[in-house]
Image 1 (spheres, rainbow, N blue to C red):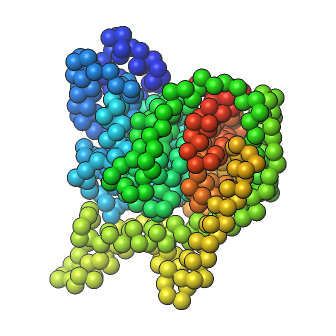
Image 2 (cartoon, helix red, strand yellow):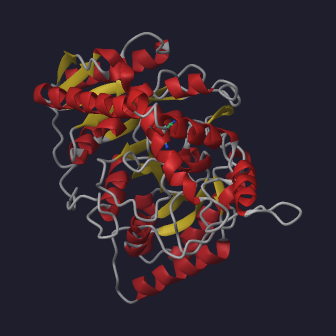
Length: 480
Ligand code: GLN
């Protein structure tokens, strides 16, 4: 069983053949059938879904026509909503009910989207497999021995398994693009600041981006268009409201200069991944695009800079979970002091990976080490930004792999965090530079695992990414 496409649901709704409550029922049916295997959703409250669907049906009956009516949306467990708790897949926030809604979520709800449930993720979005979740891992719909990727693995798997039309994820170092690639769907990390972070639980504030997962570029562009735009509640949010209405009317890619940065095509890439990325480049060339080999010399320092800066920001952001203001509070058996309460709550509330990051981040910020690590990493960040600025003088877009390998087996990275960190090499750079990246499905390996390619563009080039992305998927035969 699968949910019909958004286009089909929408026309059925607009032709009065179904109501939104019927769409809700169908989506809940698919979730019931598929979720026990995949663990993509961690919280689905049918009563609240039907209440929301009835609200949409009433608006429709009164003559309201909204752009996302008919769309079923999954929401990562990092974005606040007023109807469900937000837990960041962490024990420390179990049961925490936010008093407000994230701007991104509220805008999609106001545009007529039906929020269907919370999707699984790595605890506080720290990880690449969704295995660091208090709810257990999300499995890859294409092969249950493999992970769905992470940290937004639940959102990617939910879209791939047709449990919803689109889902929201967050991308701090690759958490939308990598699971999209692993699950064979499309995932966009927008330009930093294009979508408000208000109501998004912070991991690393200068990196965090909210973005969509979908099966086709048009649905992703619709979702992004509705949630983007300035927000007085987020000072880093850009004063820019995109309009993607004409994005897909321009079909030709003749003359488009596609950069192939050699640092993204080095050793360690799985053969089948390399082959499919090369095939994508050849397909674009045969359509008249120009392939340009370029150098981005600071790429190799991306991982080190990212894991210093992101953990530094995380150690500060996560200091608010002290047992006083949110969620879990663990005192001792007897009367305990305040600091014992902090220690108990934080040692037992946070999982292992989150504690590792807090310690790393605290270390790189500490007096005596600050200059050697944090300050230096900031300088590297500027150099990586410079690499991109130089690239935009020569090319319109960059084409790269999303990850070195097509997938990873459940449990493989458990004892080897370094291996997991290194697999982010091709995604963290766009976050360091604040530039958008789109992950697109282009094929399947002999083992049946999807492979993605990444298109990176200059800030606010989402329209070009979507249009070129659609062409890439058409040429690869991966359009739904
Ligand atoms: N895998 C990366 C990390 O563990 C990226 C996470 C993310 O983008 N949220 O930090």
